[in-house]
Length: 289
Image 1: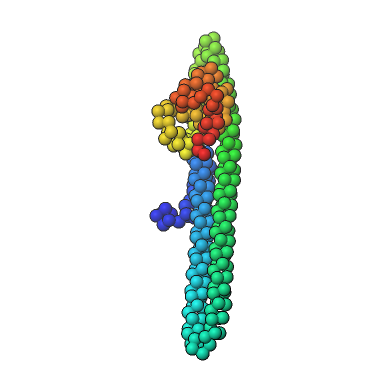
Image 2: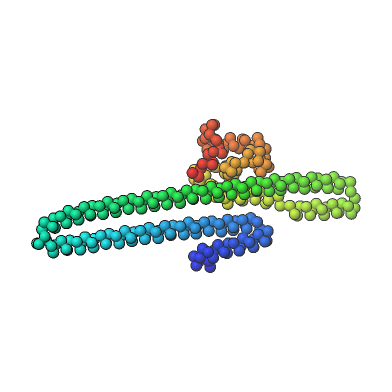
């Protein structure tokens, strides 16, 4: 209903409420996506408002300019009418008045040109300031994205460490199971089943990949346009390199080895037709510029 009514404020309120509900329900991914969508909509509203204010100012200035032109034309017509009435009697005076009038008119034109140039310069400065503010805002958002990426990396390290601990516990249970009997074996089986039911390792590890799909959507779009032959794994590797992950960190996230990651980087560089001295990280960092 909010979208049909074209009510951006109501959409923002709905997104905020939905995000809070998802957070209370511990659906943190959905809560983050809704909150991020709300922030984008708010940013669009702010930009739209600024553009509307700028358009209003331009319209007001146009009206003032048109009014000045009309007033100047009216003044000219009135002056010409008076000059015609005095032509017969004051020919000599008319000549002097005409000269004075031409001087006045010329200066008037110079003043108008000067005001127009000042207005153009002022508008140019306003636009440049808007662009500068936009760049600062984008830079701030990029820093926030980097911070969120680091937080997710820490979370994945924690999850993997916990999974290794669980694997160790399961291995110890298997060892005990071999020497246990009767009721003890039954309890050990129940413990093993309980652990398996409450593990969702693959889904947790995909948190980071899902996050990249959201915040790096524009990067993936441009990358696909420039290099349509890249595989899905190569695109993921490109996104990891873009946010500044080391080879060791990438290997950890992919459950691989640094040697394998280095080979993948070599193949990716070859598919991109980059020279040996060209940095992959620098290339992906500048791809949206």
